[in-house]
Length: 291
Image 1 (cartoon, one colour):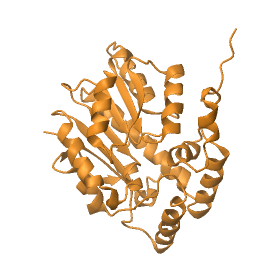
Image 2 (cartoon, rainbow, N blue to C red; image 1 turned 90 degrees about the horizontal axis):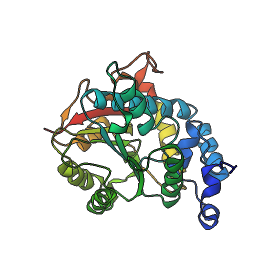
Image 3 (cartoon, rainbow, N blue to C red; image 1 turned 90 degrees about the vertical axis):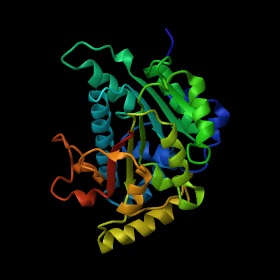
Image 4 (tube, one colour; image 1 turned 60 degrees about the horizontal axis):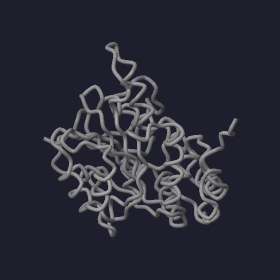
């Protein structure tokens, strides 16, 4: 009988050994309690938690937003998902939520009707994500793709087409969760979003969550400053933004109620943290629909 190894062990040794810088995606996996990270990521994450003690709770709130968005999309008739800046497909990610919700509906539904492509520009994350999906997903419907949707949205779209997983004649739910604050204005995220929104079929949904500077207390402002400084030492330096700056990423798409709000306020289902003080969750979140 063959031994089932951890996906990290199945990676090419040269790729495993090349990890010398903390990865935002792998650190996020650590924040969520995942096991697909390196010692360098865990040490970095611990330093961040010392700067921002609530970081793990903020990430949980963001993950619960993902869960509610996926369920909303499915209930709206959308069955395919494009998760950009996805990180690793672990700890309650899109395909798991989609299959559980789709197959648990009162009417019998085949979980094979849902399709998910995860996109990340980190080669280690993409390689590890592919190994995880090979073991835990369905390669016909779940794919990990290495591409950079901000630097080259057209190239990413061409690679997405090559997978054959996504049907471009049907609406797509495109998620950019906890991603855009890792794209400074200088690298052109607004132009990339314009191009991506243009390519989405009519009826598609765009979900965004983003760490915000709005409503920050003096202590949170100092934490924000030190957080940005810390991430300069990672694979993905970042930029925090205000409510109006984050709202601009949705372009002319129609916001789904309740609009761009703090993550725990978006269609809560009773499992949220920060219910009494949602602005302390630090993350704005929203969903919008293409006409």
